Image (cartoon, rainbow, N blue to C red):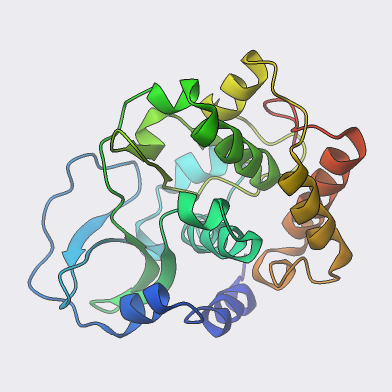
Amino acid sequence: MNIDSQIEAVRAAQGTLAIERGMLAEAFAGPPAPTSSPGVNATKRLVLSDGAVVFHKPFSGVHVANALAYGQTAETPPLHDAVGWRLAAALGEPWQGLVSPCVLRDYAGEDGALSLQAPGWPGDLAPTLNPTWCLPAAFLDSLIAQQDRHAGNWRWDGNRLTLIDHGYAFARPDDILNHTDLLAARHSHGATALLAGERQVLKRLLDDAGLLGIASLLISDRARALRERARQMLARDEVLRPGEF
């Protein structure tokens, strides 16, 4: 599947925020270092000249069989990593502050997603018990149809939650769900009703023909699925059930 137009649309959109401009402009300093918790897709840990630690996931490093199992393609995970951040930034706070910034950038001749290192550690379930973090994170995961949100795909530093790894998101109806731990936690707490700020951003998203600039960044069927999820959430006044894409 050719996603060149979506990649170019992401490139045209990124760089509006200072954090993105730094991630795009700063030179890489030194060779890659091993990652402490590598996933199934190829990942390089790098340092930028300003000292920022980043992770590069090339399009060429996608585990194809795993991607196909999720209903994704060999090309979509790095794209969706970047689009997950673009949507969070478009929605504003608290979602912008929840997601690790991500841009599309070349490293050593390979194009891919470049994500900023998130503070904290993986594996801590504390955010699932903390409404301040669990509720907005679950809302975002419902909206983007996150297929694989487990404790390895967030970081917690004792005070702050950061969501990472959005490659397996923007699912379509009948795509598989592996994990959605934060959304499941919000349901288990009986907190499915939308908050006022959540209603406002859904209305803003739906009132814009281009979904706040996100529609052009996604393959058309995934953009339609995003719009339909937003419509259902607003009509029902609640986050969707786990796996309800």
